[in-house]
Structure formats: structure tokens, C-alpha cells
Length: 116
Length: 112
Image (cartoon, rainbow over all chains, first blue to last red; front, top):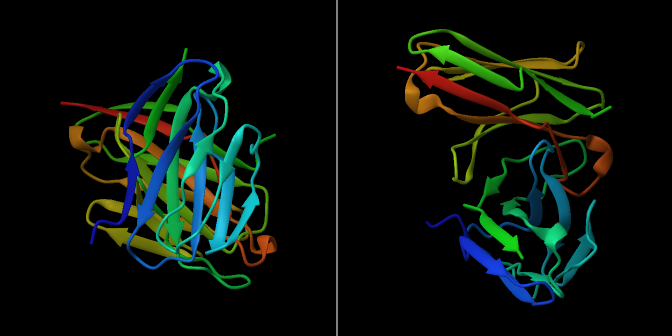
């Protein structure tokens, strides 16, 4: 049971390049999400998905695209990288909680992205 | 003002000391999570709680729903406990989503 697997672990991009951060989970979780972590700030939600074929924007979606074609995979695409996207990115997954409930969150190992 | 506030932001302790990290929040919640992040590493869930107290090894988490406050305690601290500890809450008003609101973290360094 691998949990949540993120690749790559490190990446350097030039401004204007595009790339895809991969995220896969093997726990059959409905809910998957992408966060970015910046110094002095809490993790901020970029995009999330409540199931295959369903995605929605989070707090900081600009410059990022996502898709959810399968339950297992939730890739994050940077369309045209900018220095402001230099950050640590985390993918997370969990079972879908109902109203007023909560479920444990599982996180990937993170991707450290530098845009020069 | 952040909806989730942690204190202290930085904490240095000597090995063996009892450590307390605090988390206060301003929204109604359905659950509170304590997470651990080692330097350069991923994020691991330590606790999820909605009331009372939970214990796992040397770690204890408590929550007071009325006061909107939670504490994470580490007994007999060890250098391997050095990490960032993050508090996160889930609001029941987010409906069917599992959105979390995160604190900025507490950086703990335990010196031998």
C-alpha cells in the first residue's frame, strides 16, 4: 500500500515552461486536492476533486489546471510557469466525508518547484 | 486575522522536556488535525479529533470545542521530534468537500 505518491520530488523550470506534477493514490479515496506551501503561510488549496470527472477551484487556482480522469490520479498542470509559482506542492487524499463529518487526510511527499 | 493561529511559531527545547504547542481557531469545526512535517519531507497526519483527548505514544492531543482551542503535547521530547507541527481544521460549512484550513505551523527543534 503506497499511499499518496507524488512525482517529481524536485523540479527547476524556466519562466514560461509548462509541466505536470503527478499525484496518485491507491486507497480508493474520492477526495483529492493540491496545496502549495510558502514560507510564513499555511498550506493553501489550489484545486480539488470530489471524484472522477469532478474538479473545482480552491483558494489560489490561477496558473494551474487539473483533471481527474480516474479515481487514482490527480495531476496538476502549470501552464506557463512564473517565478511566483516557486513553492512546495503537496497532493492529499481522503475518503469523502459527509456533512459535519471528517476523515483523515493523507499527504504525498511534496514537490519542490523552483521557477527561474 | 488568520482563522487558525498557532503558538509559538518557533520552539527550541532540550531533550527530555515536556513540550506544548497551541492552536486556536475562529470558525466552527467538525474536526481538527495535527500534522507533522520533517525538514524537506512530506506531511504525516498525527491526530484527527473532534472532542476530548487522544494519545499515541509520547504524543497527546487535546481539544476544547467551547474555547476553540487545541494543544499538542510531547512528553520526554527527543531530537527526532524536531519538525514543523501544523494544525488544520475542517469546517462543517464546507459541505461535501473535505477542505482544510491550515495554521502556519510551529517549528520545533529538540537539542540533545
